[in-house]
Length: 234
Image 1 (cartoon, one colour):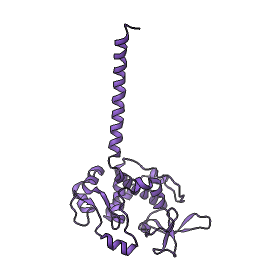
Image 2 (cartoon, rainbow, N blue to C red):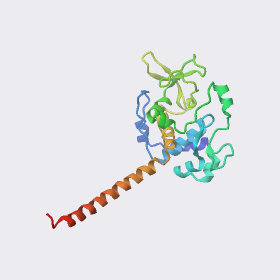
Image 3 (cartoon, one colour):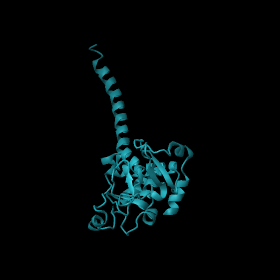
Image 4 (tube, helix red, strand yellow):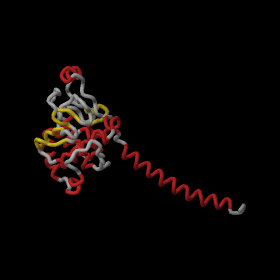
């Protein structure tokens, strides 16, 4: 799986990297590339590698994910299903909820609808907003979610940040990614979570466009039919 992530990260385009930024701003827009399957695949890889240990996607099935993201059944079984689940099952964690509540103080929430609940921009800035805080149980706090109760699971990628007196965040320990690469990776992850929140969104939008085109064509025919019916009266 790590090899797959490395390959995926290697295909980042220069233009996409340039669109990122090393300076953290808590109100940066996510600018999600909706419908971009490459982005969704990279986001899924990050989620299954770093998030699924604690956070389930109880309303999403492995098979639906593979079909929508263009991932074959073989790759799905080899790189995304770690607990022996069948492809038609929902994406759940193996950790019992009671154990999770005991270890973390509260059971980590299911993230199926987190993007719809919090919003893509909030998630994007949240995953970039962790900073060192030795007063917290996991040694980190978050500039978007004060006194957050979870560790910074993507710290190996981003590195460790500190909060300056001015309120800015500055990296003091580098991770395996540059700030630009990390921003893009988080964008992919949020893009995946946004898709999970409403898998049919793109299909619904495509159907909406087709319906509008149909209405336009129907209006043209109706207009000329109306003229034909009323031409003798005028």
